[in-house]
Length: 292
Ligand code: R5P
Image (tube, rainbow, N blue to C red; front, side, top):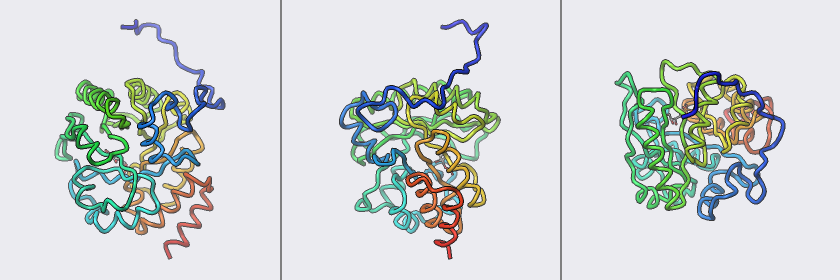
């Protein structure tokens, strides 16, 4: 193990220099993957914009019935035309998403905690690769707890899923989890996103933070940013715009879409920012028009 004494502070992020190893395939860090992986990634990320709008509705896996997600069967078909990828559990997908909706799928494959517990960082791999393949999952999402009590088991989960994914050409998305007591600093996210990327995932999901452009620059695979707790709609659009400007490859937004009084209008506005370069003002005007 490297000596930790006298560590130098990282500083050369070259945030204005595009990722170098990029010829051959549109998506950051995916050049050397095989056809199957690239095909799945091209379903998640729009090859034209290079970005994705994932709609996260996996909250039930530890929160049970969640405000805004009471009736997935009614909500999901309405949102389908305006998002690129559904991120959910196999239970929700199989029961509430008609397969003919033709969306890419980020399948949550770890679970084991509930909001009744203090420490949520201990999970297991609850879905095997064969079922992910049966569901035509385009990636498998693994909650990863760096710096928490469950770090070792979550890295073990992540490794197992990545290894299985490589066998079957199914990408893995490492979800950077933030424990209740952990500060959302750029120092933490630089550490956690890079550890997750170096484990071998094809996508990292993380959060906005100070110096996000450095976090994104130092992560050799695309980062999609979670929306987090519900914000007023304009602030959520600012969040989406800000991270896209700073190097994110999309969002994986849940509550800021499904807890809006106008989820469809919100999905449309976010999509315009992510794929069409809308400013916050343009997206906000669209949201207002669509929610009348
Ligand atoms: C958290 O464990 C889940 O992965 C959620 O999907 C994620 O936090 C995104 O949802 P939200 O935008 O509501 O934070």
